Amino acid sequence: MNHVPVLLKEVIEGLALQPGDTVVDATTGGGGHGKVIAEAIGKGGTLISLDADKEALIYAEKTLKDMQCHLCFQNINFRNLEKALQACNISKINKIIFDLGWSTLQLEHSKRGFSFLKNEPLVMTFQNKPNKGVLTAHTIVNTWDMKHIETIIKAYGEERFARAIANAIVKEREKSPIQYSDELGRIVKDAIPSRFYRRSIHPATKTFQALRIAVNDEIGALEDGLEKGFQSLKKDGRMAVISFHSLEDRTVKRFIKSKVKIRELVPITKKPIIPSEEEITHNPRSRSAKLRIAQKI
Image (cartoon, rainbow, N blue to C red):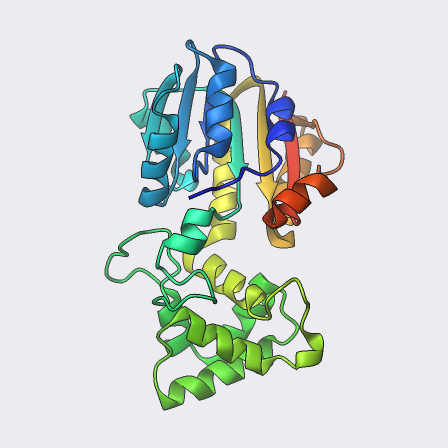
């Protein structure tokens, strides 16, 4: 697997890492950011790597195994950051990074239906093997009423054809249950007028984004994670967040603004940092990334 970390140079510079720092990589993924962070904080530093996806964490452990800093890996969602810190015997941290993008491992190799280009079961959870009763994309598309499906596609995917897509899903499931991701991808694509297709984006992208967000309560988790990350920071500690769609970025912007207003944070980035044309050329998935950094007062 070759996962390329986004805005790597900008993250490292913006966090102002120092030897001996204690840093949380809240979404360690393939360990791309973590490896460079570990090198920067050195032998006296501590890197706490979190990921709700156990497979991603196992991969990160292999990536980081030769680093000299102290390492602590936790298979946990960052919304439960305080539990992870407790397990690592850490009370306060110097820096934290949230990379909200999905890794190549998750998109291409998880076999959980994140990609509309693959024939995979419609799961879309962070969990490798979801416990009984855990919400899945299969449950949503096959059991939720049309209005509810329309609402999440419109709200979380910002999809203008949400009603047509929801209607198409309900009609298809009446014939037989919708079981696989590529099957759902075709249903969504056929529900959108071809004149509205965009060359660089598959017509099902927004719908799959919406389902993934709903299944994993991503916005709620982000709100929790940002607050707990802020609470865990020492004075002058820094928080960096890379978002990939407007819902995420608005959530991050709103959080920072609320803390700036009561003089608990100061923004390091007045406007979000975006990838250079060179980075986008080498890593097209970075094109929608936005990096915001703030420092605790």
